[in-house]
Image (cartoon, rainbow, N blue to C red; front, side, top):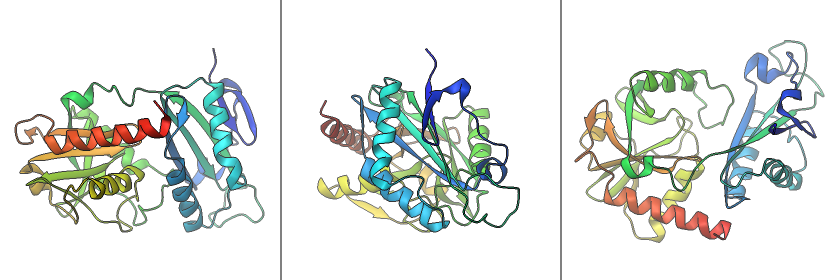
Length: 284
């Protein structure tokens, strides 16, 4: 059966979905996006996604593609039409269709598209073994706090990681880790989680926000500060987080094992706490 996608108010088979070559997302990467997990046939953490989308749109002076109260029902319908039990819904908003000009077009409706995919989130075998990361230069622009669809630098980072046999690239500047190509980065030292504080240098990641809250709730020490790549190499544990990995142990960096090369206690606990929270939200 053909996957059903959403495009500007219509649910259509993916092979019938068309976007103009003059769409500013295609021409300039002029748009933003969100990824919302699905568990037990339910979208989870939607409030966080709405808040971040609202912020991203505001930061680039772009209008909402629909009324805010319509947003989640549209994505829920997209999930239902594709019978996604576990996975994610992706959506993006661009500034719309106009002749190519760097300045914003006047009175141009935004474009709103989305699709849904199945993916194992909870019973991910990589969560038991952990994953490898490699260090890559951070080549991105200076407004990384906006969840922009312009992801060329992240694609380059991810491809370098894959070509070196790793799951993820940890981007760095002047020896300081910023974040992963498509994830947030954490280390653990002396039972304390360390992750970089929010600024224009990193994305205000939803999973990062929830991990910080869970750590506080369960009296797990956490410090928000930059950490060096060299610190990560000497850490007791390391992990990453994203919409599709939740909390994922990192067991090697640049080919060097993190501690004993196995998922650590704090990392395993954080994943367990996060999964339980998601299950409660999805009632499963």
